[in-house]
Length: 222
Image (tube, rainbow, N blue to C red; front, side, top):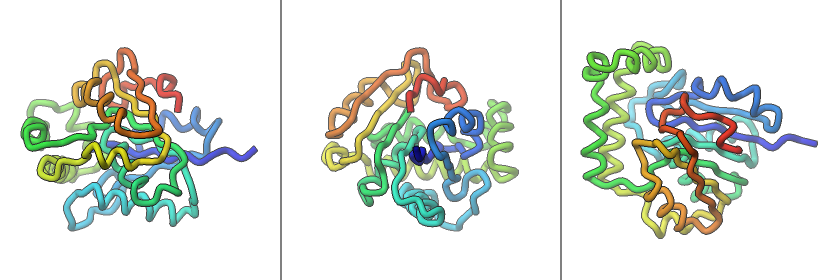
């Protein structure tokens, strides 16, 4: 029996390398691939700003380059957002989407709260372990990744995606997950977003925070 395909999508400040510890277990059931969104990890650093629509382009370019007609997707945080946008654009390419810790609704107040956390100098000075992890993940120009991610969040605050009507247009079956201890997205807002998606279920993962490295693969039931 042929194994179905599974595409793993990282979140903001993340990279495909974060999934390395999951691969052996997932490959028992799936043909697994993952990519770095442009400007992240080992992907090229383009001149254009970080935008979700650019990351959607990355997904389709990756699927086309690997002759993948249809796939399941797991998206962490921003990766789940990108998966949903891609499914709205080409629904036939996606059989199922699982998201974890994805914040679907953004506004100016949310962006104003989150953007100051993405200051490279502050991270380097006050959170050296995070700075070291980002340097390992993205290389010597990790500060650029952080700065461009901050600008992306500011942009999201201005455009305010997703609206309820947009979520309602998603036809791909979805499992929308949120950690009980996620400090980025609340259980209430995750449930509210899931209620708008026609073919979805929402699950809360006990004792689970936002960072992917602290998520137990077994709890996801991908």
